[in-house]
Length: 160
Image (cartoon, rainbow, N blue to C red; front, side, top):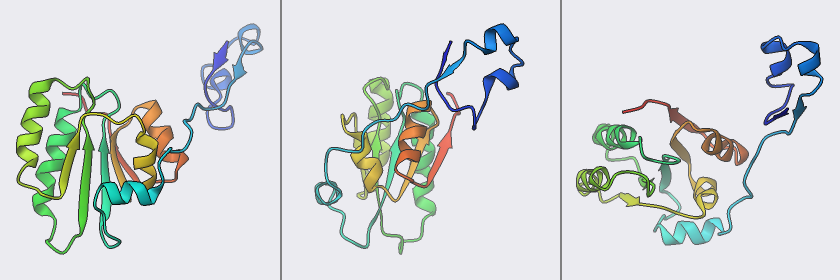
């Protein structure tokens, strides 16, 4: 039995009290992680028009089909920030998010010039590396991508 993970963090043999015959068949494969981003931080900051004093908040949803409420809540929270905050928000919706949800979010985001909404990137790791903070659905892949570059994150597993 192959297990993604490390026994030092969570040993399923002990936690699930596997019988010895089953426990001896467990092989831990460590954690799956992606390679670091392909684009340089300077390239991404330039592409997003981030001057040195601006911070980037990346909002990402993994698959994205159930992330409408997370983005809607994030956009609603922007009105609470003092004008002195120099933030830029990049929201990656994902192609799996229903088009009507994407359209509603783009309409809501239109009042915030510091917000950019994209449907997809094939190099999320580059954006995670540049981000000052990441707001994300807490799926396995996204969580490990954030942790692998040592970013501060706020996550949500809330479903619609």
